[in-house]
Length: 191
Image (cartoon, rainbow, N blue to C red; front, top):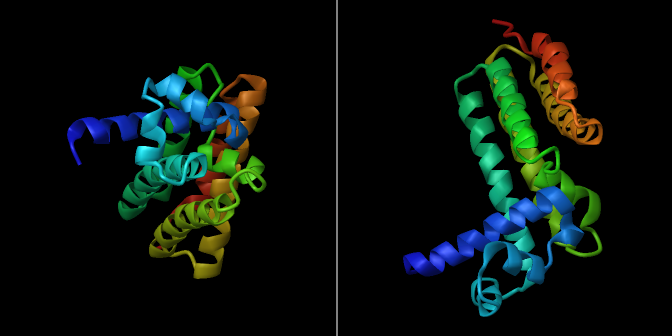
């Protein structure tokens, strides 16, 4: 694939991710993506033969992979507190940069895509499972028994996701700070 074709597709995916973060699944229309990305109309079905749904699923997968890479890298280092600190720092930068308009694309898909993008249910489930799995694995390597590691991974993901929603609602980063302050001590290694 030529660089220009790959560039157009990537611009469209990046635009779809941003729109998904700011407007939810219903706000990611072909017209909105084209307007935001500057891509020509013919690009949609050239790069996404499945149309809007393929584009939206590609966008949420891309966003999920980005966070997964961040989570997996920190988890591989074995320091789950550092992982939480990196997630909180990432979301604080993202929320500040977008004026509290942009949340998590996976959460947006989980909340409003069942009717508009039916395949999103499985994709979002897999994204959250990967994040939880990476965190649970890191906790297990740090001496937590497997069942507790899995519960704590669920707590980390759900707390960060919930804090992002509260930050957006209050236009304040405090909920993310609260999550870090209260949950980080629970993640101390048990060697």
